[in-house]
Image (cartoon, rainbow, N blue to C red; front, top):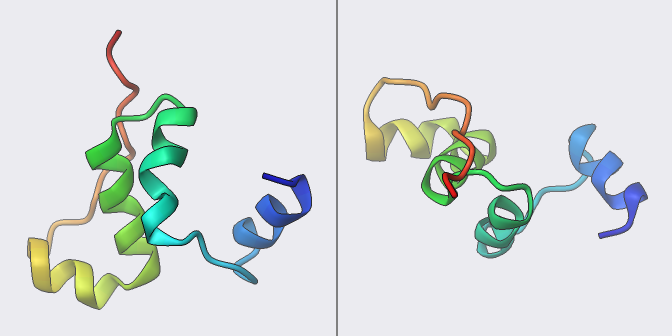
Length: 65
């Protein structure tokens, strides 16, 4: 992933495709489910709350080896 793209994602000019989030989680060594929940929340908090209730997602845990 080019650094310029990552910068655009961080600034909110681009979004991660949700279909690619599991690969990002694995590459960054985060728990895939936690990372996906956080990505969904970042994309649409209303949609996230409809699925999971009013609790905010926590920071994703690191993968256990």
